[in-house]
Image 1 (cartoon, rainbow, N blue to C red):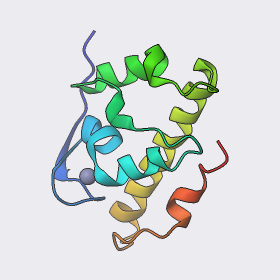
Image 2: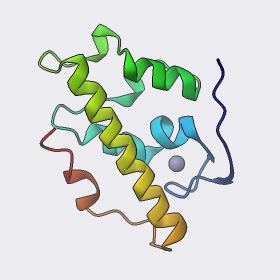
Image 3: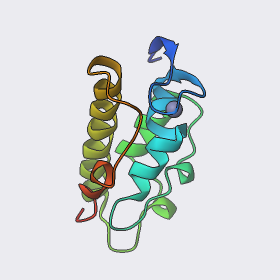
Image 4: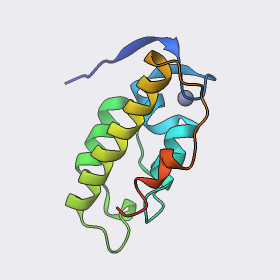
Length: 114
Ligand SMILES: [Zn+2]
């Protein structure tokens, strides 16, 4: 099965790369900051994914080395879903509400308790 997700613009969050699903949720500097803002400071780069399908596959079935000692697989999947939803909402705020690409600490603090 191959998932495709094509978007024709540059990333609205960092404005430095083409916007793809993989970039938006994993490789974007803003996305990395959001992932790292969880209470256990997750490095999204630690998930080996070269396409969006691999990213989702590794989120649903994370490798054991990618999980923090006190985080269960279920907690990880829930947190990942919330973070990806947050990234998508940030993207849409910039895209559709013309909010300047200027993120406050509020952009990240939602995950400090996860
Ligand atoms: Zn970006």
